[in-house]
Length: 132
Image 1 (cartoon, one colour):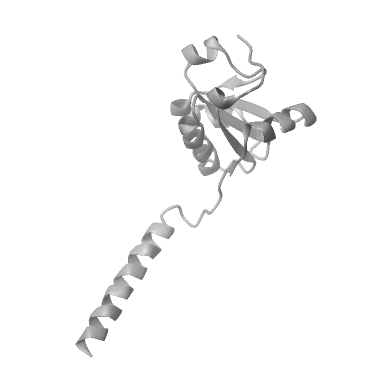
Image 2: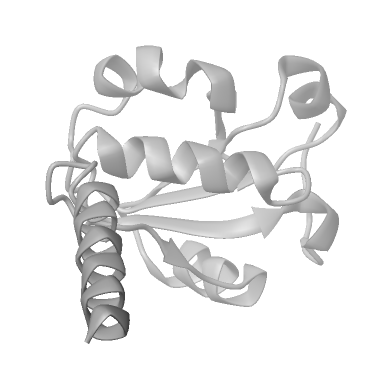
């Protein structure tokens, strides 16, 4: 019987901790969508209303970027997004160099209330044209 009480106690503690972690974001289960470079290119070629965010540094952007991309470095997204991206329902495509910073930027956008964010990794995996 003591064995079961200990097990039940551990289970209750685990569920409580899980509940705290799960509710940390205030119940916001929103997420960005991970897509491939090919899917991003299809959107760029076929859609009219979209925004491309380059989440790299200015130096990286100058070396080459996807045409019509807006430079908002990942570390500035929280401070600049609402001013530069007023429509929180706009289709937003996000990339960086390798995919790490674009994931961070995409999650920050979702945390700010953006509803249609698609992250497509890094420019190193972009097989299409870029501009300087």
